[in-house]
Length: 414
Ligand SMILES: [Zn+2]
Ligand SMILES: [Zn+2]
Image (cartoon, rainbow, N blue to C red; front, side, top):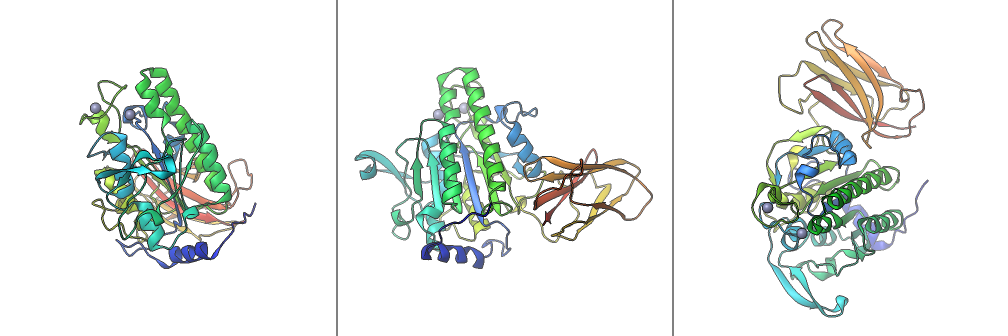
């Protein structure tokens, strides 16, 4: 269904600004036009993607296969929420200032010393508040900076609604349908609260809920014409939990420090597990790189290693062994009824070609074995394994054997 978004003058200006800018650190241009950031408060890595069975996080596990995961991502500062979340926004560990907040009946509230990613985005790209929305449960939201060059004129629009993560998701779903902001942050608080409650099963259930909401979020984005195929989603945590006691956090133990950074979207490599060490301040500059604005007071840097290398057609994602197979050329893209997949199997071996949708679902598979040296070609008609017609969108073609995964994205246009 085609969605009609009211386009006023300021939204139009912002829209044009996004199209005119390149990635500022790298000079590259990206397919990404929208970014959705999800923060799951206080999820310890060992119950998240650090558990290889993905028992609590099957949806994020599926997304990780089609996106990029940073295996060594850390909170390198304060492992508690009131400092770590502002560090995610600011791309730096920032001082927090208190003030009496008139929008919260004069209660004491916090601002950041440094500008936030929302302020950089809105000011540099001339984007109105309803293009930059922050959803959370009914709390008085901590505010951005009072920096003279940025400040409250560029804060995001806060939607603090409901009392559970599920409520926050329903509000976010409505916002996606109605306002379609280009920069959206969804903050899920329940995992941390359940952890502090001391009831292990409540903690695990909160993780399972957050994971399924994220699955719904990505499915919703891929079914929405404003977002499908041009949205990058980043999922992270502010901190973990003690490795010796899940009910608390706040020190320098690895359970508190080691957290998740999962990225998925049209410019993100598929199936990559990056071992480049990264930390919380690298998130905001990565968003700036994709959307085309600078995060000038950030201390972090954009995670360029997660992004597609446009000139590279053959890649060993895991870097384990020299590749004994190659995905030479996949063309044309976009395609309508015939995709040509050219590949090489260098040694006698069993390999397979799988095609995934952006939801991480495998839609087509074919076993291939060595048929002599040289380039072989396989055709795909754009139908699934049961010969059902698939909808238009980005698909990932993956050639893999036991050790290597080589992927390319293609666009199917019906
Ligand atoms: Zn906590
Ligand atoms: Zn700890």
